[in-house]
Amino acid sequence: MPCMPKSHLTNPVKLMTKIVISPVVHIADHSRKGCFPVSSGRKIGDGGSKALLIMAAIVALLWMASPAAADVVVFDQITTVNQSVFIKIMTKGRFFPAGGQRIALRIDSGQPRQLLSGGDGYAYYKFTPVKSGTFQIEAVSGDNRSSGIILVVRPPEKVLVIDAEGGLRAAALSEQSRSESLDALKQLSRRFRLIYLTRWVGPQMLKKWLAEKKFPSAVVLKWKDSDFFERLRQRKISIAAVIGSDSLLEASREHVERRYSFNETSHGTLVKDWSEIIKLLTGRNQTE
Image (cartoon, rainbow, N blue to C red; front, side, top):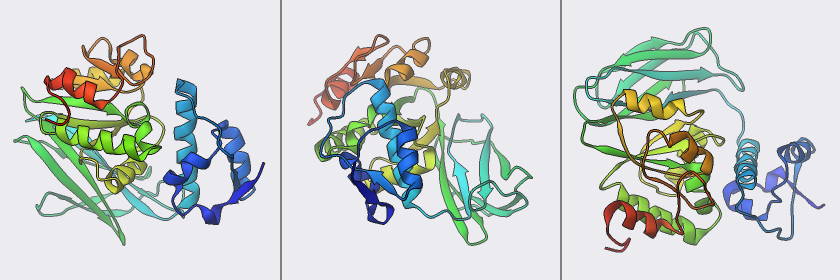
């Protein structure tokens, strides 16, 4: 099978359409040799396992294309008015978290708070919001800078949860699909607070992609298990709908009534496109 050198990966997401979606072990094996397998056009299916491999391949491509460097990372959070939340920040070296690093944390345009990361590389700051909205978080450590968002919801506001691997997978592979999903989410963001979830790609990588493609800014959270929806319920956060993979729909079935997927699912409603979702959630067509 022909190979493509790492040096050719100038736009790894766009290049995904040319990559054979092979098992992760196969991708890793080629990456160690300094190249990636390239196919003349194997068709990508809609199955859940292939979706996982697509996103795993994107992770591999983006990781290989980016040089490792010291950094600081801010993790997005969601809460409600007067409900305290811990802002989490990580300082890291070239490959692993690095402790004992000084951090200047700023919330919106407020005065910076001085923090020190622990031995595990993490620092925490307790924040209790007194009003709803989005709060911009900035962390500076040495020459490194990172930003994040805290979404504060006040009832009766509702949130719309979008699974990146299931709800936005087509947008990563097709300009037309990306345009349709972008327009739809801009329209939905005027009615609901958005939450992007990722299980495989990772919040920081997904944030960069969303910003590059000009998707509506929103919190990006890591989804690990069904407890995620129980935690939202405990915080009294109302979910309008969940859009994504069958596994996400299954995990949310006890907490969310409206569950939609673009792929075959036994735990929600199969929809053909974003315009159908808009009509189901708002009663209007996408162009209205």
